[in-house]
Structure formats: C-alpha cells, structure tokens
Picture 1 (cartoon, rainbow, N blue to C red):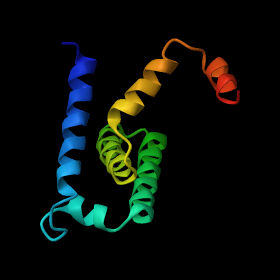
Picture 2: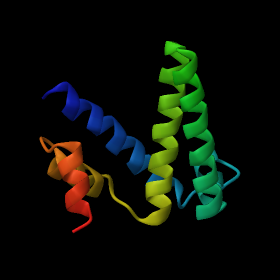
Picture 3: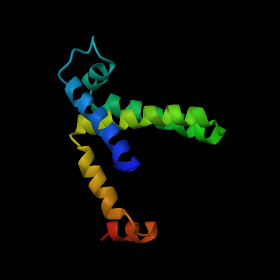
Picture 4: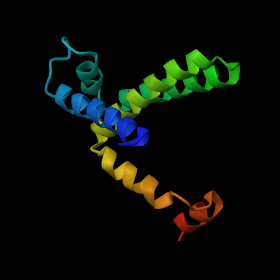
Length: 111
C-alpha cells in the first residue's frame, strides 16, 4: 500500500469518527458539539481555520503550517459530514481532474 493510500485512510478513519460523533452528546465530544451548532457555525469554523492556515503559510512557519493544516482538514471533514458529502465523492472528483491542465479543467467546468 502506498503512502497516498495510507494518508487517505487516515482521513477516512477521521471522517468515520466524525460520523459516529453525530450521535454523541455535545457535552462529551468537541466534534459532537461542533456538529450540533449547524452548518453555518461549521462553515464559520472552517473559514477561521483556513485563515489561520494562510497566516501560517505567509509567515513561513513550517510547524504552524502543519498544525493549522491538520486543523483545516479536520474542520473540512466536519463540513463534509454536516452537508452529507462523502470523502469518496471528493476523491473521485480529484481523480477525474488528475492529469488535466488546470486551465483546461477550469474551462470544461463551464460547459
């Protein structure tokens, strides 16, 4: 198994835990608490984490980029869960785009 497969498995396992937390008490789990706040708050938190990641990148702080990227991925998975998006759907979309020029791919989206 390649590193990419192992990495996507980590994300899949995290997503699965997030799904389980939908049925947990918000008092017992940060994820359950976040999910209970609704899509707007989840999206707001995702945006905050994205901004924190951008700040770390622009400051060139490697450890901060790693830390904030992990937070960003977690909150992205929570956003997927709250909107019913499965990781497999995103992986399939990425696979469709693989090997295509970004310019070509973008032009095809408009058609």
